[in-house]
Length: 53
Image (cartoon, rainbow, N blue to C red; front, top):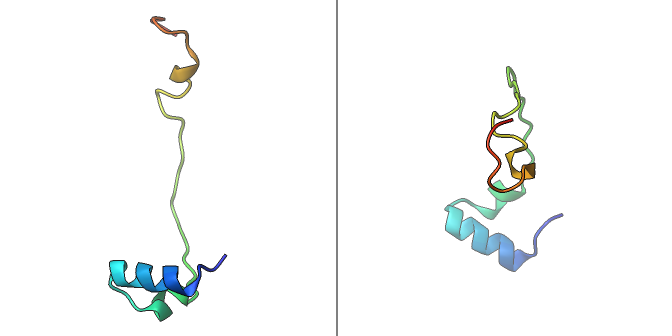
């Protein structure tokens, strides 16, 4: 989705870049990225006041 010209110009102004920069296509490659489960994951599923696993 490409924003309209008004939004594009406003973004370019705020970010201090040219509109052409925002419209240009760039390819990036991420290497060595590892994901692991956060130690607090699932904590929101516990009943309030519950302590422990």
